[in-house]
Image (cartoon, rainbow, N blue to C red; front, side, top):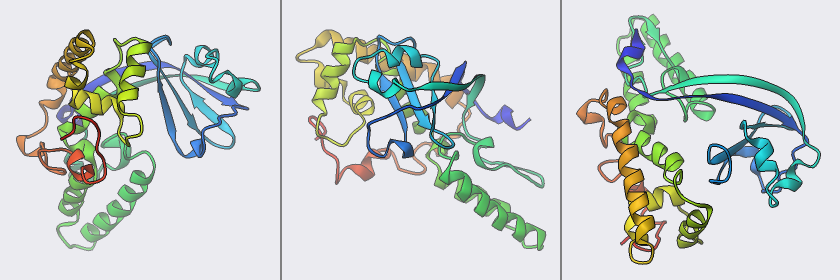
Length: 260
């Protein structure tokens, strides 16, 4: 019954493939999940990540991605190891992951940042909380909840807005328009999708039609999230990073045109 306290962000499904022999040329790619926006691909994007050994996890549309001239050499010797269907219901986090003597940890209580290092941190903090409770010392679970709500950005509504904008802002853009936006932020350490979502006015003067497209897409994305984010209490907004969001903390190091 704990999921009744959570909003449904989206439901996604597909078939993922595990490949061996992929020869990615991006340095240190094995430590990252890579996302490629391309409106010419089915679904508009492609993802590639490293799993056990020398194998890669790829989206359903990997064959279309492998035909792109820039990336075709990566897949010259690629072979499919396995294919599996998948279905996922993406929910907002469980802000208070305790029910009686049950403590829900890791990605069972909130996805994304709890898949790797976050999972280890949750396990460590959970053991400390449970040990305290078993030894008759009250406060173990409340302390875990307090840590949990401050440790992971997905306990703020702003996380879901940024995640949805990052994955959806380019859905209606052409390849040329995406290239144009990327050129605006070339040389600046920002995520172009989030940067243009925050400042769509940057393209208004030279590309008014693109500006209207971006503005309408941003509005549609944010409106679609309202039912899911209604489960958050008012105090959750800005509870970690403040009203300005994480960009406030990156400000001293990151600048880009129009950010002043």
